[in-house]
Image (cartoon, rainbow, N blue to C red; front, side):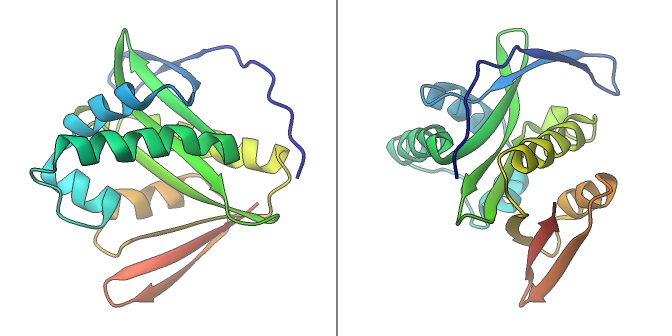
Length: 173
């Protein structure tokens, strides 16, 4: 799949609470920003995002994972949101095969339920279509009510397949 990577201009988004965030493309050098977002996630949000308990992870492990995530945009796309200089959340997809890409989203607890996730997921859907994908896929805990509500808000057809407390989902583009 061939994609052009023109420089995208940052975008301003006004959230439900009236705050304005700047959204820009995730870059391979953004690991420090990803670590900052991770550091502002509650234990519950970390559990829902990573599907494992991460109460007191080794900082070297967090740095390694953040670097891997930042570098993953070489095979996909991602976006980071900032309130001033502070990163507050992000969303990305990574190529699985010629037809599908896997998505992931993380938002600081104090920026959840403000419209940012809906906006970024819609942005992922739009860019994935432009990149020629047919499906966006993921896996989440059945109890992750925020994600399931988010998928309902984007008005894209998706299927959900439950399996022992988790569900895989496929968004058809």
